[in-house]
Length: 200
Image (tube, rainbow, N blue to C red):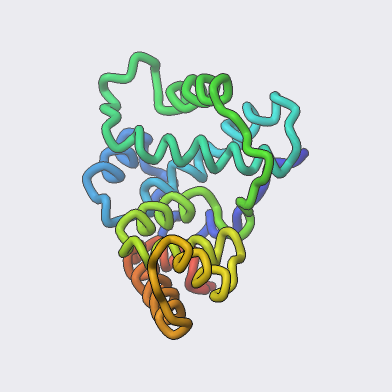
């Protein structure tokens, strides 16, 4: 199975970071949480190694892609507090390899996987999930049920009514539209530029 390729890895915002040292990228990722390019640059530098480690577990392409996203989501949060100088190992690469192994020993794979690596590369997924956490709870619920589980408005209304919340079709559409707007606005500008806007 081939290691996936990501055309956006050559985006000008990421190209300019290819010569930076790991320590610089990590520090900037931590110091500038409103910019996503530093985490994305680390991901594109090291995802082939992590992907190769996952492949050694002889899992299907679908599971491999899902595990790649899952382990990088874990790195996204762990690296926020990682002190490069205090690493017990020699480099960020060694840290990633060690923690990938630890992750694979503990992870359990769900029966149904809805993740799509091609449409949602791990850096984008991390920032979308972070944005979802900041949405109004009702907007988040309606957006997730609609996008992830393909629920239509009627099903969403029926579920909410069963939970004791009366809501109209117009309100569901409003919350859904507002959820999309707020979610996109919550993404760092450089993440929007890399993943949601065309360049060339």
